[in-house]
Image 1 (tube, rainbow, N blue to C red):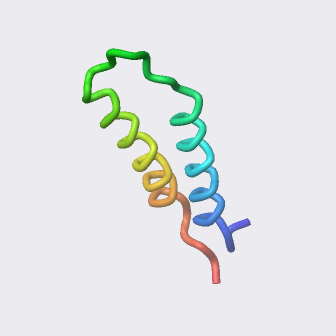
Image 2 (spheres, rainbow, N blue to C red):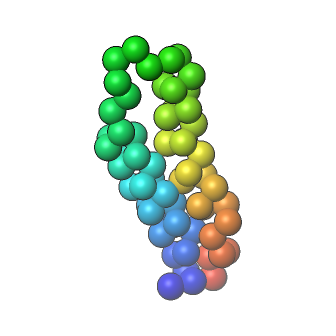
Length: 58
């Protein structure tokens, strides 16, 4: 499991980030910053999960 820990974290983060952006529909008339926030969550979540995952073992 340690051999692929970063890869698993990246995949899980991508799946969760994609699910968040796909599951949440912003209602009409949402402010502009709601769209920016959605993009930030979708991008930052996989990045943070990958960064904090344990190092891959050789």
